[in-house]
Length: 336
Image (cartoon, rainbow, N blue to C red; front, side):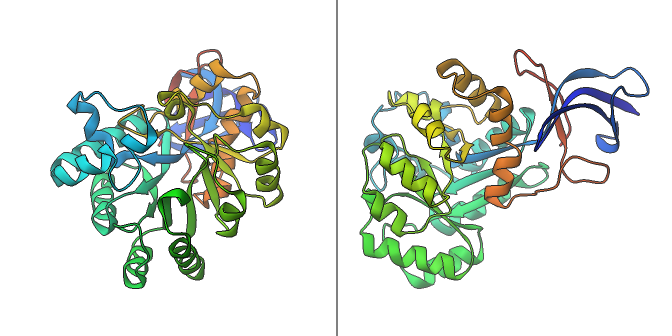
């Protein structure tokens, strides 16, 4: 048996302890010092949840294209460059890129990620093929192929995914959005979308769709975030992606209003899907959050919001652990 020791992240804070492993599975958990010398010592956390990804565009990174730095030109449907390249590329190329991103996530301690899946049912199929034999799971939020509501299409998507994850209300006719939201809620699935990413969007319209969570909210105002908090709607921030477009989340306002925050890496063609890279970046651009708060966002907080595997690391638990160097947040040990 091998041991890891250090400060274990719990929902109530850090506590000193250790885990014992056999064949990469937890068989023992204890407080204080382990029975024999540990293989490493550091901050011990549950494996991570990447709360927002688009890994279907991973293959684009290999094309060495100068990507436009405007949201509308690069990722907005239906004419953004990403969507053009997705249509032109083979399934084999797309899946190979997805597999690369899943491997990056696994090697940085991510055991589950929430992916906004483009290209309808084909996108769902491609992601499921990419996940086989990886040990990593995904919450798949699908989306219609076109920017309109078709009852049969949405029904089929919901039967084959965990919910619907849309672009922005600015891209849609609002009456169609209401139909998609209502249909998704009826099936008790997750409904989420990007909001106020490239411009401020009407908060009444945003909240009127009753999202389970929102992504970005870069241009949200003080009053917008107050209302988001009042409605208990979490927000996923993806600051490296925002930085690509010379944008930045308003961390001080998010903290001021106590908005429940999750962290994602967004488009894999822009930034690596390593959640640790995202945490390190956040620590360089803001002092609003402690390391403990950030680690909670990508572990317990994300599992609660996304209804992901909510077990805590323990013998016979499906949740593994990550041991991090306390200063650099470099992974020293990963059990997935």
